[in-house]
Length: 433
Image (cartoon, rainbow, N blue to C red; front, side, top):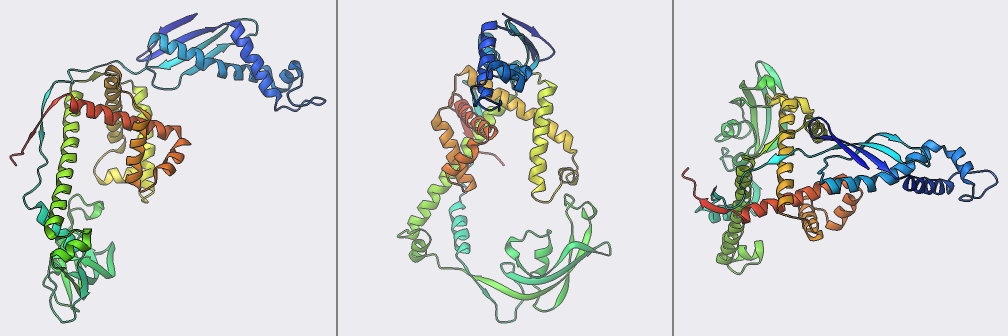
């Protein structure tokens, strides 16, 4: 017999009645199991009388073991019969266990909130086409030539050019004080690809070697250090050496060297194929994002606070660990961006839950299921991403059920998003920007 009572939000209380004979069988099995481990003087393990095992272990512990073995089967039956979609592991809140009588167990189940969505098939959706720029092949060739360029030190005295790599000493100050971490010696700076403060590399162009000069800059408003945001600064710089790139000649010999191509035209054709493949992948991702966003806009769901709180705590732990590996604190990172960490993470938690609920609903309604091949493909994708072979990754993940669950969720997410693209009309349009 089962009594089900709906409590607040998405919580149901289930009162299960487990037949006395099932309870007795589970209890007897628990006695047999413990008898293999307990030491009872005068008896070999597994041979001690039931009463002595009960005295040694305690009936409470034996009943607990019996309940732990019994409940999953009966809970699974209730879940299937009532078509419950549970969010977390069932929680045992009360149990009345007396041998010879039916066991009454009270279970608390947290269910997924009800969700309604609008039409998600046969839509017509405009997606911005990730067009390949007309000069994309030429720029790719330029990057390839730069990659194989020889860097040599300039022997004759001359001023720095914007394509040079310079070796510099520098020392910066702002508001009359030295900038912490704003000094360096024998630093190699690529003037064409500098990640320094805007204006710093430009201030070195045209300057001679072995003469100290000032470079005046202004820190960006979004700079991570609060005291330097938008502040003017001056760096005393000396160019100690200048290096330049000697570019290889673009010819058939170069094509053979970089990829085993017979001619430059063959190299160009391979680059074009690669760019077209990138465009196709970008278009697919854009289409998935646009269609999914369009469907998400139709979603109506009240997410229980308990679900948001759990996801928030998980997110906070995830971000805290990620930042700590970089020597940063979660609060300071968000503070530097002018954001409240808790507020941002709670919004992200709610968004993640809504996303997952939508994926699960479409998967359920459309009977989209995962196969072993889907999991294998996802593992291969992740192994390529992290540079680890698939077998090693599988061994690592198999010992962590939580990670495997996350991978399964990613895999079903991919299948649902592909389903949405396949079942809607995608119009790729060129941006007018």
